[in-house]
Image (cartoon, rainbow, N blue to C red; front, side, top):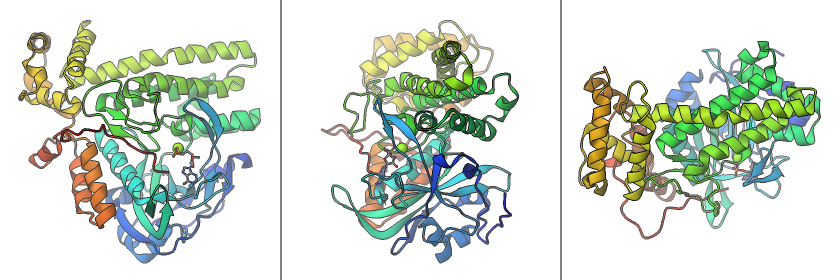
Length: 490
Ligand code: AMP
Ligand code: MG
């Protein structure tokens, strides 16, 4: 590895990805843009990365975010990957993103710094390689909200406008998001290696993933099985957290699922308001493949595609390899369920474990579904004993349920105060509600007014605070004739 020096802004790039075989990437400079302008910078994230926020906001800093002038030491590249999109296998790759480099932080961590919307690459197919301001700010808001909720995710460092228009259904302001990820390795990266590369390529990728994300697997008897188990474990925990928060990803294609266990690729995602397992927001998900209630089984499906790519590494005998993979994958539903149940117990202030807990939780969810109750606010109301006039709370069945819930909490040695604290820390006051996100985006994109977005971000940054400032952000959207729809925005 050649000597790299830290720049004045604090960029300290390494490029371990280029140690992989050449088929995994193409060197690719971002395409310069006409007239970049910084819209938003994530100061606290910048600092944790070892970056100087004053320099980042200066002209030279903005040129980096725009892709006009990669920092010294950067060797930008576009990554190859494939994936199942809505069940259909396709060759994909970074069609509009460029990896600037891997930032080594003062704490000794390594993060991918990626420019999303940085121009065409070898993998762009028919696309223009660009992104719009609305969708990039949307990713910024939701990813930062997810982080604050305690859900593993890629982060957003900055958004710049390019000074160039992009053509979609209408003309949009062009923008670039700087995305920070513990890596951009995807299930689709393994599918690419397996389908288009050699067994050695898959092995090189698996070894790289182990070194970067599962170092403990390296010493195992079967490191590749450990890798598989590691990814299954992290994804089970991740999707449980999505379910508990009411997050709907919207486009859980295998290329949008990471090996690290972080949420990635915020396109048509949104948070559920009224509790209904069939909830779908994405306009392109017509069959409801990625509906709220389908997210756990879809994660399992994606993990099975991952396991398939590892077969030649799992055992020399292909039948035995399939057996090993199937055994590992068959653990997923149990692992998922355990994480979900643990999280649901916390949401209801339940310590310890009782056999009846699952039924108690399911009965509540059943009533919430029937009564079209707001998911987040129902748990908030239970947390603070402020049940208000929602239809759910006046049901006789609910009154009976509440009695059983109180009996259950009454049997635990922990105090009421402990239970309340657990509930406060497990039930967010605020989520990025769709109408609030739209309102912030409209002000920023249509009127150049960022104050609405900044206030929303501030409120979302402490979701478990339950402060008076958050109160007005807790209200569900006013009733609307049309269901909320999200678009890919590509
Ligand atoms: P996504 O739906 O964001 O996961 O993207 C799916 C694929 O389409 C990825 O390979 C992207 O890089 C590619 N893509 C999305 N938008 C564009 C665009 N404007 N130009 C080129 N490629 C794109
Ligand atoms: Mg994607």
